[in-house]
View 1 (cartoon, rainbow, N blue to C red):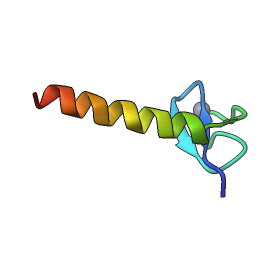
View 2: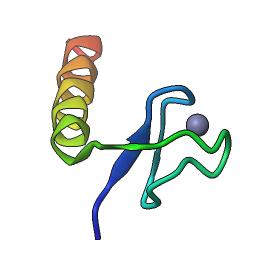
View 3: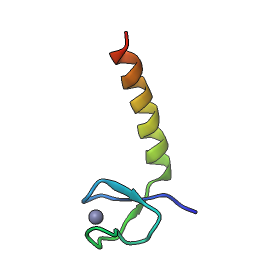
View 4: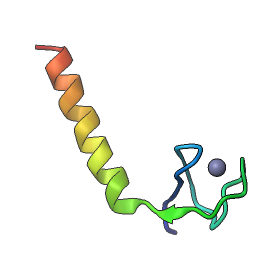
Length: 48
Ligand SMILES: [Zn+2]
């Protein structure tokens, strides 16, 4: 199972094509992890 992302809609999907716009999706696993980390950092900053 690979996590993919549609660049146009900015949504995550497991399909090769976006279910919303039909665009080809990109492998987004690593980026997803990075964004999760950034989200956590933001969360920490907001609570300081
Ligand atoms: Zn899309």
